[in-house]
Image 1 (spheres, rainbow, N blue to C red):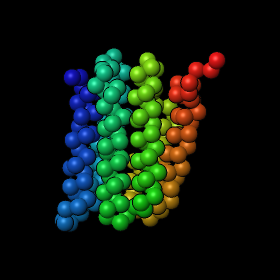
Image 2: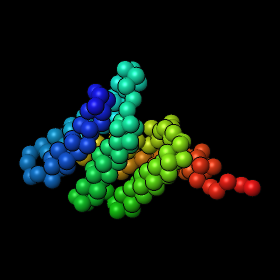
Image 3: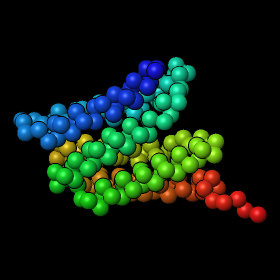
Length: 173
C-alpha cells in the first residue's frame, strides 16, 4: 500500500470516530465530531493529490476512494437523520444517487471504461461536506446549504448518466 492508500483508509477509519462523537453524551461533542469529519474529508482531496504527485495510483485507491467517500458522507448523513437534524428524504436522495452511480461505475469498469469524477461530482462532494459540517455545528443557514448540496447531488448524478449513457445502453444496430 502507498501513502495515498493509507489516506483513503484513514477516511474509512475516521468515520466511526466522527459518529461516536455525534452520539456520545459529552460537552462540545459537536466540535469534536466536526473536527474529525473535516479531517476525514480533507483526506479525500489529499489522497488523490498524493497519488498523482508521486505517480502512485493503485487499484486499491481507484476502488476504495469513492467507497470511502460514500462511507463518510453516508454515515454522517444517516447519523444526523437519526439525531433528527436531517430529513429522511434528503438522506434518501443522496444515498440513492451514490448507490446508483457506484453500481453504474462498476458496470462501466467491467466494460473497460475508466470513470473519473467530473467537476459536478467534485462540487457535489464539496457542498455535502460543507453542509454536513454546518449541520453538525448547528450553524444558521445549514439547511439551505444542505438543499444546495441535494441539488448538486441530483444534478451531478444526471450529468454522470448523460455523459456515460453510451456505456450502459445496448449497442445500436
